[in-house]
Length: 191
Image (cartoon, rainbow, N blue to C red; front, side, top):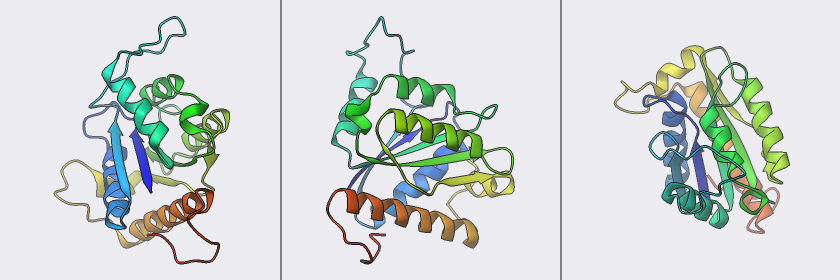
């Protein structure tokens, strides 16, 4: 399957981006085509309904990736109980032609215990874009984030976190397979 991950942080050493890199690696090892679009490395222009920015290379690339995607992963830090400004800006540039009928997994990294408010807001945005929210999400916070800090040479995650990430990714990929007509309920997980 073709999966696009949008890493929605504007921070160079984002734990959320490192979490998405880990998820990317796990899904690739399971045989899926995964593209990570990092909004820190490829910043987008501010959205304005008065200016389409159709010639912006990064925006053009993101729109092409999403149109070809079978499913999407959205990742954000939690800022003041909400999604990051750069992720919201990116989503404002997009529409139902990019998300309609596609499964979307929400992922958050929070300085507190969990980033539930940002996850709920992402799911509301996904519904408005006519995407299909995965019933599970991934949220890391507090001490769990240390496994994804930039100083780590490898992704040595704790067993509990690793099990949860794998379980949620498996659920997300099963949903994608079912919606794309490539799976059967009760069949082995695609991860």
